Amino acid sequence: MPRIKRGVTTRQKHKRLLEQAKGYRGRRKNTIRVARQAVEKAGQYAYRDRKTKKRNFRALWIQRINAAVRAEGLTYSQFMHGVKLAGIELDRKVMADLAMHEEAAFKSIIAQAKSALPA
Image (cartoon, rainbow, N blue to C red; front, side):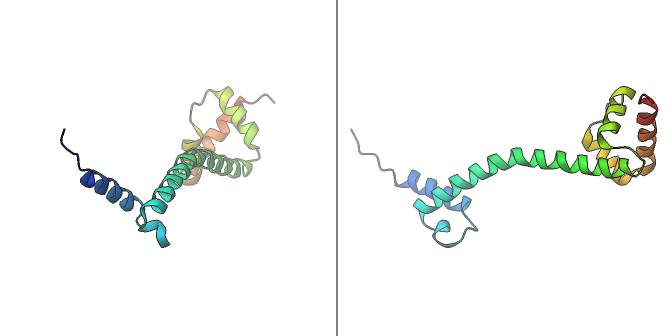
């Protein structure tokens, strides 16, 4: 049985790993053993923070909607309740964008939500 040399595949794996570690400081960018640990940890952070990013953006949209709604004399929770009663099916991302860029359109949504609330 012939001997198998593995230098080519190992070098390819190491090269790919070091390309992922490009821009890191110290031995993390040029030493295979340390770079592997750094890249694995970076992947864990990236996975975790993809979830956190969604959470943060939702919180930002809520803050923007709340600020725009309070100027019209409602709270965020009252507004959302009115939106549900009025049957408006816009998500928070779209409503926050309307509140920021299309004030007239958002004020009409606020008026609809106010009228749907029980007095």
